[in-house]
Length: 289
Image (cartoon, rainbow, N blue to C red; front, side, top):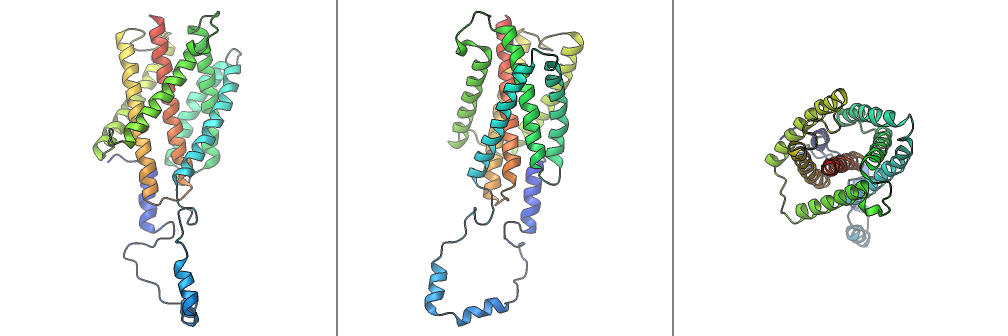
């Protein structure tokens, strides 16, 4: 299986006994004076103690799906708020800074978050801020380039259509994953991970080609090759969503600490934003023809 920083940490900590569980095969502790005191308890007290419900994930500070959902909603709200700021900055001299500065910042900080030994919530939130500024500014550029000035129907706007398409792909992928139509196996995860790494390298080369050569969409332009590249990227982002869903399920099943909810939510938001940008690019290419 391809290396995953999140699950490398989960596997390591599970072997060391996080969330209140000892190492496998560790010797049992000798009885203490506190344990011996149970001998003096009445049978009713022992029965009452036995009848108490066992500690759940919340009590043991283990990861739950609610943790991931709440953190995802929180980070998504940060992205939306600063996307609105980026949208307003786009027509000003700060627009290019928001776009190119956001790209550079998210690339560097994204790697730091992924490989940092400890989970840094401030870094994750700061990443969401930069991501929002970048997404808002570039969305404004697409709207100015491809929406007619006289257009009044917001749902015909390129940004609104990209948002609707992103939510539709997200819902469809989640449904396919939950119903077993998409099965995330070790082989599936390896293929998707290698494809994402390859596409990330291509995207950087394509960005340089677009900026230096003054080509709006880079390699392939608005022709069949360019449209094919966009469709492939959207499919790859959808596959990565399935991997994200599986990562969340695996982390919960492994009894990961609650703090991992930030890292999992961060990964989900990154994939969603990537999916949105690829759909926006595809719509831009189609409207250019």
